[in-house]
Image 1 (cartoon, one colour):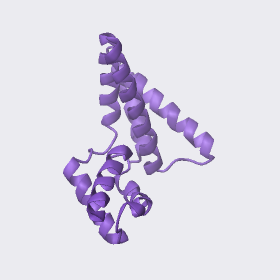
Image 2: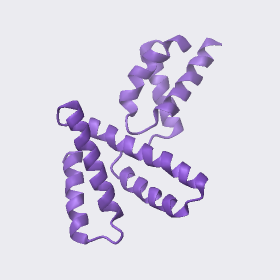
Image 3: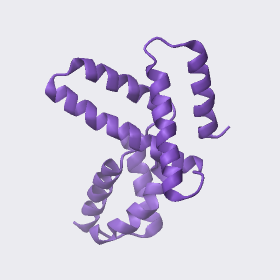
Image 4: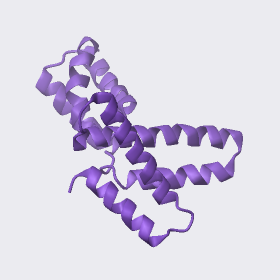
Length: 153
């Protein structure tokens, strides 16, 4: 079952269950709308990898909003964002730990034959497809930069 089919099935179940608060239902609807908009923009149906990208982007947007709401002291909106993030996370693969991400980065560095910080683009180009939806690009970039920096010393 594709990710889009799973979202559609879960939306039907949420509708039938008449969930209290309807958070799950509204998040699934927003995710499906974002996927549809992306399909229109790209001009083709999205693959599961592309759907994962859209869901990861939606989750990241909510995490950024969550931080803003925390700074503003809006506890009601913090709870709502946390619930939405939890729903979106259920559709994403298990996130990579720092150690797993470091191990993958080391593997890619060895495969590419990177010798220092000048090879950052090569490494990131190979690493990002492997971690898509499972780790943030900023975390991967930081780890790769550290590893390549150590090689240059």
